[in-house]
Length: 78
Image (cartoon, rainbow, N blue to C red; front, top):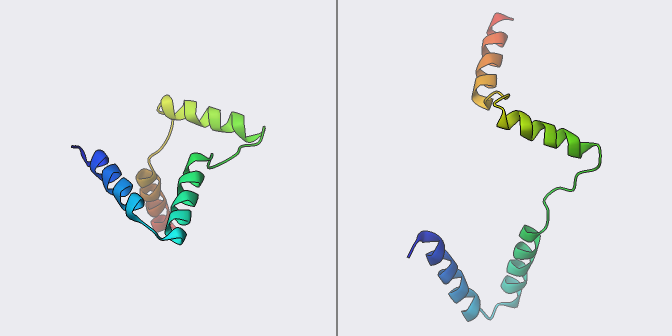
């Protein structure tokens, strides 16, 4: 059994055995919120996100580590 299946089985068992209504409601809230969209974009944001995703696909981006390194070098010169 893979790790994901083991975790699921463990959770199912613990939920089935639980009599703690506060815990069960909290778990329900977590599961409900994870199914909802994290962000709702307005009409102005949607094209920007789409453009950015295309830039990433095309390799037109800089790694965070590279940008930080470049900024550190720039700051040394100041």
